[in-house]
Image 1 (spheres, helix red, strand yellow):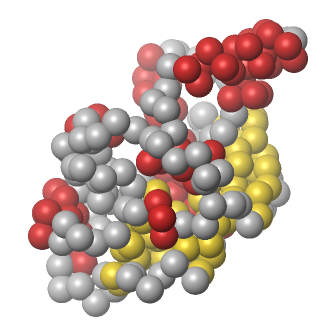
Image 2 (cartoon, rainbow, N blue to C red; image 1 turned 90 degrees about the horizontal axis):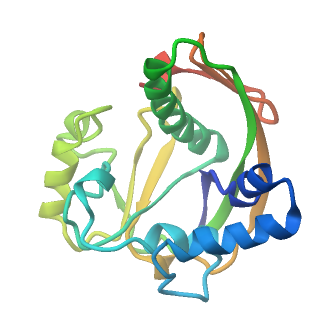
Amino acid sequence: MIDVHRVVEDQARLTSYRATQNNEKAIQLEILIDLTKPALKETEWHDLISTPFRYILPVLPHYSARFRLPYFYKNVFYAASCLQTATYEYSYHFMRQRLHLQQRRKRIRNETGTRTGFSVEVNDSSVLRLHDYPNLQKLLHRSDYSASHIFIKEHPDSNFIVYPSVRDPEHRDNMAILEMKLLGKTIKVERQLSYFYDYKKKLITWIDLKLAVLWEQVC
């Protein structure tokens, strides 16, 4: 058993409160929002653990990722060997979304907020490590996931894949977990991570971790 780390938005309560400025109305809004999401298939696991597995299968092309190819019959829980690596990975997706916002608006304010980092235990008895894979460079291309999609097609029974992060400058390990039952049912450590995002510099600073990430580092 090992611990893996993940950073998520998990801002439903905060967003709802900002929209309503009222605790009671925020709770009502959260309930309405949650009703629009697919139902959790397994209720024994903590929401932050089970959420990646709640989405309708097969995977729609819009939601494909490195080891989650279009029309695949499994969902994927992505994680990392340490919180810093998970933060680099999250920073990439965070800034990629905001680049589209910048293209649509001439002026946009800098952004502050929080995200949730957490760890969970996972059974690594069936782990498949890709560090010595002969086609590793193509498999870990930063934007072209075609090689990793082919890999999944050739290894359909893989349920726990470990590979070097291409976003983390130290290339520490990432994990793709395709079977929820490998994961512990409860969170081991949870913490809030404060950030400041500078739109002009394309730089996100994670204040609590003393970690600054430029778009050019992770894109």
